Image (tube, rainbow, N blue to C red; front, side, top):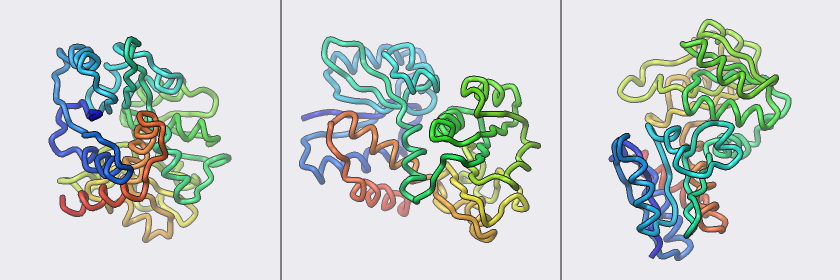
Length: 272
């Protein structure tokens, strides 16, 4: 039996196990997906232990995505973003680190038939999710503006991306009024504060595509107000789904049963 898992802290309410196990069941793969909660001081030991135990693959989540880069051989995208969320183990080799969050963003837009190339995009937030989102949009051909409470952090992301990116404080969110894509990469609007929104409603318009990385609740205040403005909306579960899909495909070399994984994910969200 193959063993896959998730390392983070906390991971008690992770939606990854049911999503991945639905994929194993659909394809008849003898595997299980489990969760681990090491501390920051024991992260390296946890990775080494996974190697020793012949674990096949791991996902990495908050707060370890950046720290774990030091303990794996990161791929080009993971190195550029500075974060790893998927580890591929190969016997007698240094574990390979991937960032499937970038592909997850791209596939979420692709699933909704949204062309990113040539668009003007605004990403609100410059943390781990913001970095992955900004890199994904720029790599797909968009000009990206990162708006963040701490301007210096946004400027760092923009500098790492290059000429396609600019940065500013939250006051520069007004650029959304002329943008084609808005991606909220902050936790604003997440339960239990689902009455909040990261963006004033007045900035939203019918030519905008809005993706909110928050998926609890699945319909955030930002998405409700975007719908009211006539915008196209994409909920955060699509990003979660597709980063998992890409991880599954890296680990198994097989096409993921996307619909089965999506059904299992949304069933869990409905029960929360």
